[in-house]
Amino acid sequence: MSQTEQQDSALLALKAELETEKSEREHCEAQLKATKQALIETQSELEFAGSSTESRQNQLEFLTYLATVTFSQEKLEGIIQSFLLRCANFFMSTSAYIHGGEAKSTKVPLLSDKASAGSLAENLSDIDLTQVIASIQEAENETVLMSGEQFFLKSHPLVKTYQYVVVLPLFSIKSHYHLLAIFFKDDHMLDSSKLQTLESGRNLVKIAIARKLAQIKLDKKYNELNVAYHSLEQAQRQLTQAEKMASIGQLAAGVAHEINNPIGFVMSNINSLQEYVSDLKEYFQQSNEGKLEEEDKTEVAFLLNDSGEIIDSCKSGLTRVCTIVKDLKTFSHSGQEQFIEFSVNECIESALNILASEFKYEAYEIKKQFSDVIDEVTGTKNQLEQVILNILVNAKQAMPDGGEISISTYMDDDFICISIQDFGCGMDEATQQKLFDPFFTTKPVGIGTGLGLSISFGIIEAHHGTIEVSSKVGEGSCFTIKLPSPSKQKKSNTESVA
Image (cartoon, rainbow, N blue to C red):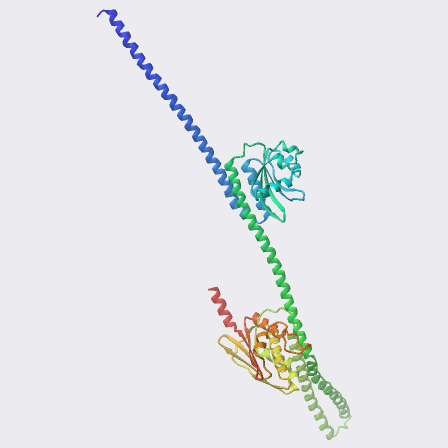
């Protein structure tokens, strides 16, 4: 082959190789272009996914904030304020809390400041509240989207500033609506997923508000009940004291007589002492003059001896008066004493001292059988005296012609018992059923208030005890009071703590 032919053959081979390389290069470029496009699409998808994730994160933070912060607020205003501010941040817009009635002007006490919020705060009172409330009622108190023209009065300059307003009804009381409004200049932030999140947040806030309103009502009702309870407690104390005074009033004549007797003989004794002193002065004068005879000395000894007896008698009488006055003072005392431990037997004796004149001069016999090994009771002494006195007075009135009244004390397990038995007219079953009812009485009009046994029942109940009656017509009645001993009360407290 000639040299020329060899060169042509080499050129053809080179040309073919170049064509092959060109084809391969074009194929690689097409692949690179396709890969680049795929990378661009992947980046776009990643950016969208990142944006969606961020949006979901913001929505989650929005709901989490409402779920934690709103329920932790102590006041209703705090719940609304936190929701208001969070909505403004969530939509990067302006929000306002509005409340008013259909026929009343609108008030905007709270406002989250964003761009142009100043002008909004100055002009928000000029809204078409009637139209806003009508839209909410039509939507059955659900969130509504209104145009600026619907929300504001048509002549209002903010109609051109805010194109949309989202209105969220929170609650209403007697046609007075409480709303949250979020203002949008355009539809850029009106994202459907955000609006759905907003509705979920509104439901959370509504639950928090409903809970707070219920708590406010409950607190109000509790305060009313507390006032009523204290008023009732005060009335009960006054009623108890009035019944006490009524009992003392019924016994006043007898008590006066019981006091007057010792005072009478004390006065008589003092007159005798006055005469004795005069005689003794005369004898002492005679003695100084040396004129005192043996017979006079015997008289002086008698006067001195009898004076001592008179003084002892006076002391006894005055002691009796002091005892009666002390028992009356203790019984009539209206103070709220703390519970103390005291002897039931001594309490009964004090009541009998007050009633002594009622039984002393008439045909009544008091038989006492007091246990020496009885525990002391924990309570208020003058209140228990009132109970015993009421029962004793009733026992006397059940036996107008006199008779026997038996009083005994004893222990029954962990209970201190007082039994008061009379043998009077007795009561039928119907009377016994109503015996402790307020104002129930079998006595004639003008005698008794019908409160004595009712108050007695309340006193024993306040001492964690019981009072029972057994009676038969014509045979008499027996009242049994059971009070827990201090040891039983301590045991009960220990068991309750355990």
